[in-house]
Length: 415
Image 1 (cartoon, rainbow, N blue to C red):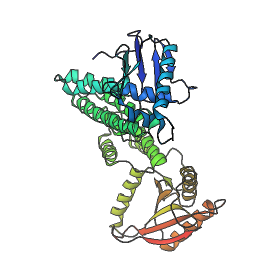
Image 2: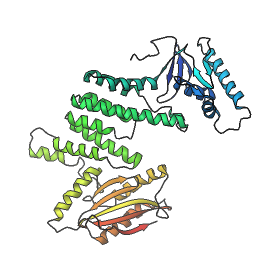
Image 3: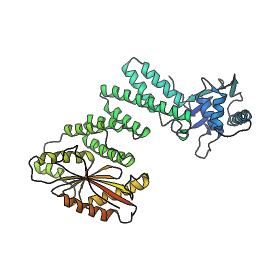
Image 4: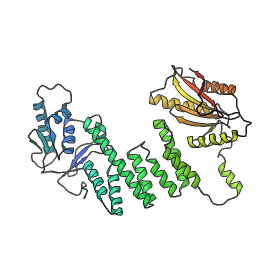
């Protein structure tokens, strides 16, 4: 299919629906500028142009234009909106034709003016890619389809039922398209394009775990340091935005990264230097990502088999003055950062600290006692609670030698 661009034909009305809405004709913007206001003209054109093949019934159009508003003569009001829309289109330079036709109670866009809608072209590209038999041609068409999806369908109007339904449908098509494209790229070992597609998909459809595509590509390309940095950035992003730990797929890629990392031969002293922290006297506990914390914990479990140490795992959670979860995202983000500083500065350098989710931190307390855990809590309370009298920290503590199904012991909550 030939994609029509704004330079490929003069008498074409271009409709942008992905990532926003705009209409343009012969290089002139009809609607969609930053200063343009939402209006019934916009609602009319969005629905009419998107549904131009099958048309829009009178009842459906009236519902979209006026909703539950009490209109004395809704048919007259609808005719007025259509009349004013025709005047606006004519004033914008479109040929003087009957733009909106009515047949048997259904409204249609005229066939006299061609329309190029990005959503329709995206769907056609997906269909063509699916039907293509040649693997190379199929990959090219899938890539075209993926990059033709430039954002959510009419994002400013997702509260409208028909818009939200179409937005979900197009997002599902995009996800399916990306997965099939990734599979073809993986089979062809084209990891550079796979990396680019992963970055693009994560930008267009954020917080949907597309980072695993980029991570896989980086690991497959042997760019281990880039992969490690990308992983850390992704974990931080998901913690900040959703309070989530990395997905199982992301964790699997991280383990694969660790198993595949290779270094040049070097002297032991040089290797040891690279393994050490950059700063010799970093204050507070050892702050690390969750996967690193998990690795430390598992190593400690093995060390416990030989005995001789008392180690506790502590979970710290920000709560309100009634011990409930804090819902306000902005407040929770601020308190999460404050709690992290308080926790890290309240434990020893030999203790490991990791953010577990929004308002949550894990601490691995090495060579300590249950009484010492209470002392650590008092330190955290002293640093955290000052200035936040309506918040507190809830603590859960388990001995590392406890069985996983043993019930947590709540040591205390301070408000």
